[in-house]
Image 1 (cartoon, rainbow, N blue to C red):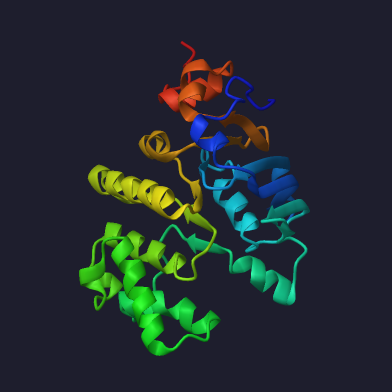
Image 2: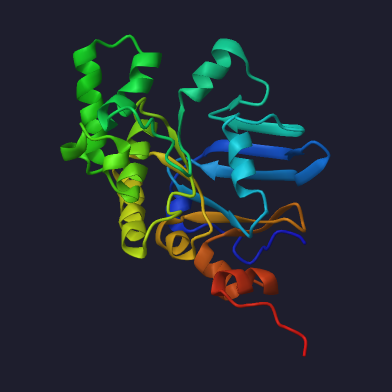
Amino acid sequence: MAPDASAAEPPAAARQAGDAIIRVRDLTVGYGDLVLLEHVGFDVRRGEIFVILGGSGSGKSTLLKHMIGLNETTAGSVLIDGEDIVTASGDERRAILRKIGVMYQSGALFGSMTLMENVRLPLEEYTDLESGEIELIARMKLSLVGLALFTGHLPAEISGGMQKRAAIARAMALDPMILFLDEPSAGLDPITSAELDALIKRLSRNLGVTFVVVTHELPSVFAIADRVIMLDRRAKGIVAEGDPRRLRDESQDRWVRQFFNREPEAVAT
């Protein structure tokens, strides 16, 4: 299947976001002999909320892991602010990683550390700031996500939604240009999920950070996405790209419309 062209023109918010801050070119990824994605290419524009979605097993989280350099690619390049994270090593690679922050699906907070200590950690590891400066920055990041009153709490002492917020605060600790969020709404009730969507939009608007979000939660997609790419395991690549509302309403691909409208496959009788 070829990428859906019915929504090729990006929405106004994405057009105004400027040049591409991420350029993925001819990316092929998989595990061993299993190829999940072949010759994938797309851009993420500076300042937009870019969503990667698709069915189960389509390679959403795998693509994200390759974009942040966590997994080795079979072929292709991932340029972050002009530098290829695939080929970079040493100080060059560390400089690229300083430009990104990651929130993993589980939150990945250290359970034995308070929220303050979790957010302090990247600042202690990667900066030469004094302890008082680190404390102030960590407190500011937690305040940005609405957790100013919970700095001394352990992750187990707060709700799942608050853990996700704390993980975002830690991802923002080093003031990255790009935030990668892997399934941020996973396991959350609808109200908490909507509150997290509102937080993502507010951070994007107020801080100008570029977001790359992996999700299969359609309400979140329609709430936050400036633009999406849709992966399909059968095609081993992108089958649709653009404004999710236009893809839902105007796509010429029946399966894409089914996905966005939550329509089941027709069953033969």
